[in-house]
Amino acid sequence: MIIRRSLLRQGCRALQFRGLTPYRRFLSSEIDGINTTSDSLIDTQVLASREAEETDPGPRDTFAAQNYENFKHQQQMLGKLGSIVEPHYQPHTLVNNPPRPSEVTLELLLASQAHLGHSTSLWNPANARYIFGIREGVHIISLDVTAAHLRRAAKVVREVARRGGLILFVGTRPGQDRCVVKAAELAEGCHLFERWIPGTITNGQQILGKCTMKVVDEFDREVKEFEDQIADRPVLKPDLVICLNPIENYILLHECGLNGIPTIGIIDTDANPTWVTYPIPANDDSLRCVQVIAGVLGRAGEEGQKLRKEAAANGHITFNPARNLEMPDKEKIKEVARRRTSGLDYEEELGIGAALMQEPKSKEDELD
Image (tube, rainbow, N blue to C red; front, side, top):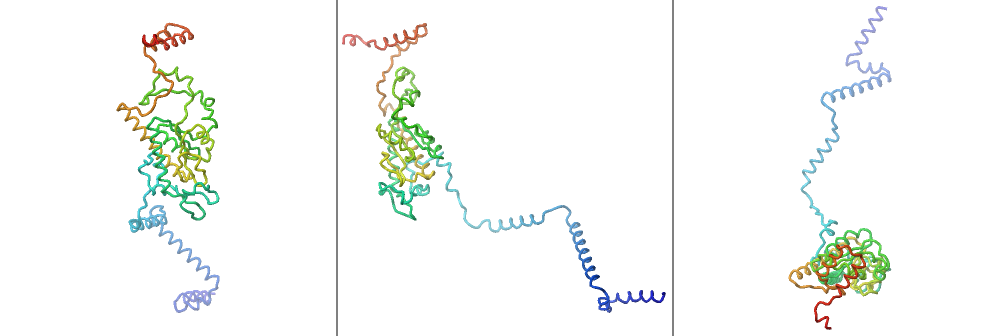
């Protein structure tokens, strides 16, 4: 037994020498080699993780940090290359600061897509003089004609505003409310961005009979002495109607034609240009185009109002006063006010007021 144990000990030591490595591999089994290899790999991974923990003092996302460093490096190297794209189109500028009639250019109309018409199968033959050509089955509107008609319409709006006329801006499509309101504010007119009620002009006394009216002077200041005279007057009618979508407001244009009210409208290739008095051939489906046209007409109305007030400041009245209105006498008004405060009945008030208004002004009137 002692000799056998000594041989085993000496044999293990002999197998540990380098020269006896092939014999040791020959004596070892395949399973023992796999186990030792897996154990060595596990030990290597454990040592690598420990070294990483020792070198990294805190938790850090090295992948994100490396990506950020690469991004900053590329930005520094390539940031000065290429061109700078400036924002040419800002939608709010056309509404808040619309162009003037003198600022209308072909580039502005082209950028607002005013030249795009409808399909050739939907065109109205009456618009043949406004069409420049055909591209991919769509009619192209001539922008020279559009600019000329827009300037003519702007002159009409300016003269109507200079003579104290009432201008009505109508645009009932979605998105047109802001430009319609802004144009009406510039021209000091009225606006409508909801559905037009049929009969508002032809039967205005029934629809608008309860609306109040007031008398203003040349500086648009209210004069309150005419309240009794305007109580039974018919409702006001616009002197000019600007319609931004004539196809949906044909009833409005028909009523204006029956009452002799001039109209201005945006006429697309599928609309009838005879519906309005002063057509503007353009794309009525483009909101940007509508904003440009409404802004130009609003600026024209603003210029007309400015000219009217300047003439009034110089003592020149550019409009005719309302008919069937008599300038009230201040003494008679004071007499009626004094008798009202004295406690008279309403019927007696009316009788006294009528008698005072019918008194002759001089002895020559009595003789006549």
